[in-house]
Image (cartoon, rainbow, N blue to C red):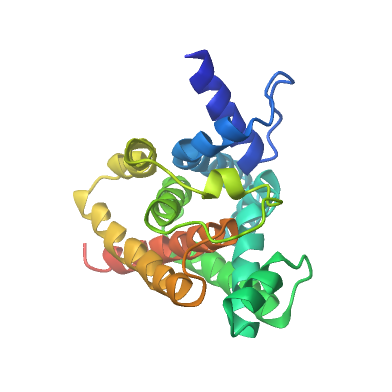
Length: 253
């Protein structure tokens, strides 16, 4: 039990800025296993965003409350996944070989493709949430964060890690994941969906997963696998696709 608590807190420490006890060490072995709690971290991050939206909605408009919610989730994760999405946009947009793409993705500077991609995906995220009934927005936010992180773990499961260097902090978490770890991640990833008042909400899993398949094929073609940035990009895209899928679904129920 103590070991599992350590692994879970390692996931919190690695994927968020939430303070952890001092006795939680940066153990590569624990970090490698922490991916199984990626979806649970999503519930926590999404819960923070949902709480900020709910609290702010008593004072501000729905639009401002959504923006404050987005700011809170970006802050609590240190823009970890947004950074990965931007790096992937820069890499696939500006590189034509595996080596060049990996070099661009590792560069800390933000390029034109990354900036454009980041602005557009955040704009779509805001616009999609704005169209959802405010009563359901908190649950939709939590579900979007948990489900998208589960889908990101499926990328780690299906695609090999491709960076040759060992200097990446994300390598232990992105290198591999067992089937048992994937099942646990799936449990937490799908859990919030059970709180909707219709089982049709599970239909959103299909387009969400297909968006991962689309990116996964690109990663396989150009890189031969995935990196931590790739998992971050999948999380961001899947989160937005989930919100859009909810909008489409509710037009028919």
